[in-house]
Image 1 (tube, each protein chain N blue to C red):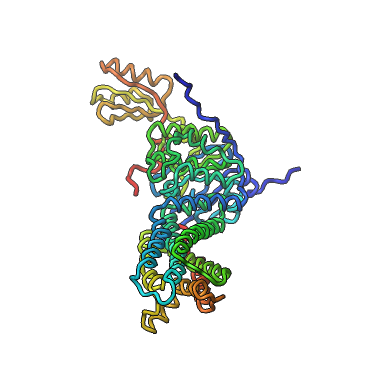
Image 2: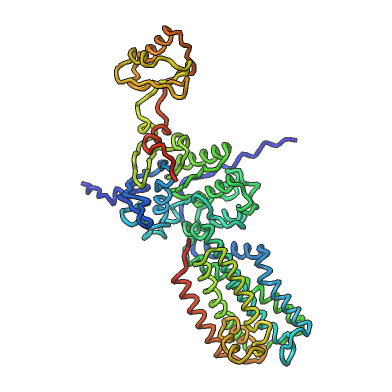
Length: 315
Length: 262
């Protein structure tokens, strides 16, 4: 009979296990008892407002910072104690910088490729990310988007098992963003585990197998995008402003809610059963209300995110 | 004529990690650093152009009284010492300071290249650039009629200790100060030590007490030691070797203790 798996063995199966992670700067806790698990071969997105602790968390996983408390296992290893064994297996794309301003794009990529035994062909990788013409351009003269793409190339050139991408598409134009998404999706299909942080809900919704929402150094929600947005649906339509919503509500099942915001944009929430659409359209017909843009949809990840983390501005 | 646009080559992204042998990583890093140094105009000014100009200027004119014997016999060892300082100290401090500031040292810390490997590559780079400087300065000096004598092993030992001392303090500065402060301070130290370190201005022009203090500077010890060997034919000049050894141990120990990678 196989012995029962203890937690350390279970940790070895995951790409990343964080348990009760704490990191303080002075008296402020940037990370405050954070626990999460990222499966191998999956794409996990860390979402959170500025200052939520995303970058600190990722830098602890990368071995750049030591946690004050808690347990970290990256590919089953300790990022501090097992750094030597771990580094070839992990690719890192920092949020900014990391390449000398005077280094030429192709030159720096070939340098990092030379640190690995079976790297990707640097020229092919540059071509893939649309940087062939910039191969001889010094890093400081690349556009912001080109710098981000080179940084992504540097992270993956060693053919890692796990990549950490800290805001990979910030500052990219739509073409570059899509090129980045395609490469990230391909990495995942090839069996690479990906942990990315992002502010773009669309990015998380499109790419992530699992989304972890972080706020004030803690996990406030986690699940697949579908789980997070839930079964709850909402009905939206546009019509002339100032409809008598009280009257509409009497026609709807109990527990429903309706509001107008902004003027002429209506939102109905509640038990959106099969008859609801008919009830609303019948009510509109009987009141001579023309509707436009009428649809039933799930809540977006952005709705959930704002609900979880509030609407006030962060640092 | 139209040719079909070449489709980007398919990339096999399936994980296949592995660290190259450390020697290969160090060589790759060294080649990369040497190329970067030779492309850097400001650094070439500091490491090659200024030393050669000083050699030509003071060797070819009688602007300074350099004591008895051929002028180049006095100047060439001093300019070699300046060359060592410019590469091991000034260039290394500024380059590494900005690498630290822009997160390059941190970024490289996430690659399989160990930190000791990075330091080894930087040291190799310094030594290779110094060899190039020695060839160029030597060629100019020979053309000016230089006849060095003395023990090559003593000269190499002095150069080695000088390199260690200047590297230690260059890295200490790069790893503790802000990059802009390092830039200013490293250039200032270069100019000051050029002026008062016996590089081209003989130290015996200073009053006795000041001279004794200046002789304890690493640049003076290196210039004086090289002169004793290459100009006077001495072997293993004890005083300069001891001064350089103390600076080397102190600089490397302080750098090892206080260097911050980010």
